[in-house]
Image (cartoon, rainbow, N blue to C red; front, side, top):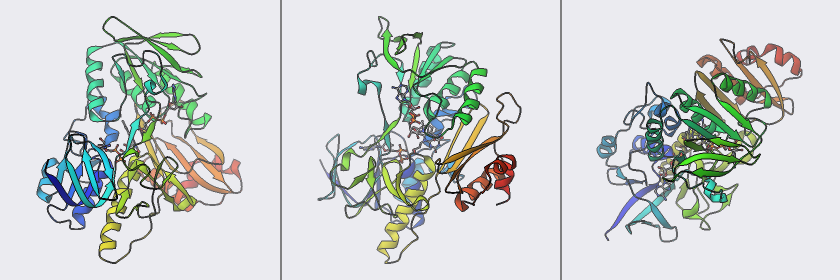
Length: 434
Ligand code: FDA
Ligand code: NAD
């Protein structure tokens, strides 16, 4: 099979790849120099849409509506855009081997690709219940959500099981967003997760209690402190019920599992330095291997603000890390330099008519402020995290754009606070005055 050769190759065609492509074009990449190789069948798109408007019964999002870079207010990069720029978009192509020493990539179909500079942008994959050998976890209508193909299967099941029953395994991002989306489709939803409250990676008990009550008021059953240990199937191999560790059996004709992700670093394993489960990079997303960069979910990079190495599995960082790596590549070719990556962690989620944002770090003491009554009309509330006398993180539900800007600024400035009671009383006004 013929060998193809490019100056720059991005492996992976997700969020980072799309934002990297835009930056390559801005930096003046020449026609024929760049290839994006993706196992997906479509051009890079804004992955967050898959767990939100893609599943809505009304106002449904479909491609080409959410190709990158619309998610951050930019123009959509349609497949034609790549053609116009002379960027090769090599789709339906999984790279199964990367030999960094000879700068060679091999696809599942046996094609060979050569590069001078490689950007690894393979993102994450889902953790599956079959990975822990949960009985019956291979039944039909048990879904995971990572790529558009997964979302399409789920959309089909929602149609086929109209007014049916769904069990959602996991109380993290996928669990909370998918429970809401299925409920909006008039499906009976039950959530199961092992922790004492939802989204324990980020939420305090105080934050979680608002969302749990809000979800309960929408008719969602929540079962905490246990896990799914087995699935019953019918004669067609379709799931019919879920056995929980605490002995309960819950009927379900759709199951969605969101029990976490795993960065896809296998291609370069043992060829680059790794750290905290990801590929270790510097502040320019350069790995320990010459001419190899890693961006997005797979990168473990220096988070300057907190002076430690971190891996971040969120879209804002995927976009910004990709842009940083491409700027660094061009700067290094031109013998110039750019500023180190100085990232302020930013996470968000939307479900029902709720919308929250978080900036900074969720460590230290916490102060809950505002109106967290789940039945109130405004439900504008938040939480500050305070470490070593400084506010290091802020969470806000239902903030206006100005208020969200104010909490972002606050998390960046990290102001000193001496009186937590006063901070609680001041609430959002404290952020507005920074
Ligand atoms: P991404 O996963 O976007 O892309 C990786 C690409 O590489 C995929 O196209 C994959 O097929 C391809 N690939 C992998 N291995 C390959 C191989 N060997 N050969 C070829 N191609 C390969 N974040 C947030 O901040 N807010 C939000 O609301 C959401 N919502 C959300 C919903 C859903 C359903 C998911 C799954 C994730 C989110 N996220 C999110 C997280 C966010 O989407 C995620 O952090 C970014 O997409 C990461 O971007 P990457 O480019 O690193 O990976
Ligand atoms: P997650 O880590 O957010 O949540 C996983 C949840 O499953 C946790 O509550 C965990 O304790 C629970 N869990 C673990 N094992 C379990 C078991 N055996 N049974 C039941 N529950 C179990 O991961 P996720 O929600 O699966 O999301 C996957 C990826 O997608 C992450 O990278 C996430 O950042 C990303 N994502 C982000 C957003 C967003 O930022 N708004 C939205 C969707 C997905």
